[in-house]
Length: 230
Length: 400
Ligand SMILES: Nc1ncnc2c1ncn2[C@@H]1O[C@H](COP(=O)(O)OP(=O)(O)OP(=O)(O)O)[C@@H](O)[C@H]1O
Ligand SMILES: [Mg+2]
Image (cartoon, rainbow over the protein chains, first blue to last red):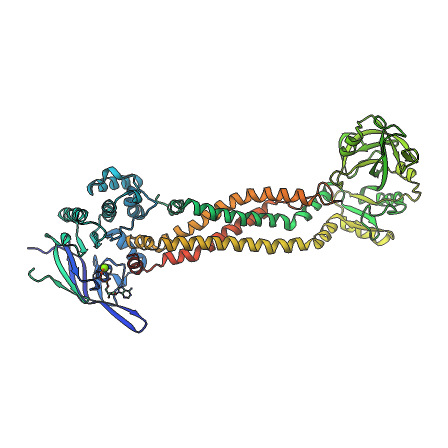
């Protein structure tokens, strides 16, 4: 079987935080490839380096050693402007705390990345509506984040992450703020995303997000390996 | 919503009360700045306006005195005026004198009844009306007077009435000594007249003879320069050969007045600077608050793909919006306050009616607005720079 193209690749990745004389190696010698259509769930104890790894893969943090190639480009060799542009065009982020703009409606939040990319108003509006329908929020497009529940806000955030048809969606504990039932619905939405072709890396403690078809990787003390038995 | 401006606006109006308070703060600072700008040169400008509006370019006054300071004035003023006229560069020279006279109205009081009113009588050449603004009627010929509106009202006198003029009240008769009957031929405002003051204008000769002023004194002689002749040259030449008068071109007087008014400028400069500093602190405070409060939101926006430059512009816009709103309302408030203060200050006794302490010149208003805008930009710059350079991963982590 022919291998799918690589979306992001880490090689001998190191990320060490230094504060005064203390240095904390958060990620130590991680090498991995995420291919188109993959759904990877990263599990691990708190402090094992999951968020750090995700930030490195998405180009919002840079490695202290080793490299991340995001769509073939070494994140350390890109200017901040180009790296920002790469994130805008090719990476979707879903945060634990949603981080929607409270001043904007659901639809405008979803339009924001498209507007940054310079898409026309008509196109933006149409795609935002389509995406909100896709995540099951067709009825709430005019609502502001303050008028939505946690699960609804996370749906808006997922729609926003999908806005520019990213090659990769990265989610850091996307169900961390939600109850089990709502978390289950979001997990189901992620499976639908993946089934429709979205490449996903999800950091989580939530077993619902680590169900098949997710490939589960486990982090321990800054290193990563596939969960035993897989 | 695509533009950074509208996003900045919508973020600000999410906290309408806070925004209103800060805008009100900037408004007060802007109003103060505008008033200071108006005050700094206002009096000088307004004096210049009055002096220039008379249409004369050179002025002679009694040596060492202000005009009307003493009744003795420049002696033999007709001769000096004649000397001016003889110069080909001079078009016209008008001696003017002033003396306190007592008036009672014919209709109202009769020659020996009622209380005569003390007024300032202005002697002008017969048939001329320098430094007068005639509202009604015509210049006075011998035996005629012009009344200012306040006096006409007090006497209940109209054009065509006769009034009694005297040099001093006479307690014996209740009338006036050395009185004369004169005819009112119009209503005129004396340009240097103070609020509520009683003034009349009559031919010089009439006032001289009534006062027994045999030396033909003048409080000032106004000289109009012909065509393209130079007022400074004329003033200098006459100054050199006239013993008992100070002779200056009007612009020289305005400059000299400006020198005496520098302390208005210094006061305005200090208070204007303080108000700019206040505006700066207000903008910097609100921007810092807002950026801190939005710290994780800003990090998320940067993660999603908003460039540093766009982030900087968006936050900088917020500062400009606050200052813009404050400036617009501050202009209005500043003008109202200036008018109010002017009405208080110009009530100071003896000030000419037409003088103003606050004068707004368009260039100065533009400068004040530009300074305020620059302040808004600078005040928002550091918070905007911080927002643009947020450590994305760090800020997202702190938010949890
Ligand atoms: N900015 C930082 N400065 C210093 N140390 C940091 C910083 N960010 C992370 N660390 C350290 O790096 C290690 C890994 O952190 P990370 O957030 O990646 O763990 P995590 O697996 O995501 O944990 P959790 O499940 O609690 O989110 C931790 O020991 C943490 O204290
Ligand atoms: Mg984490």
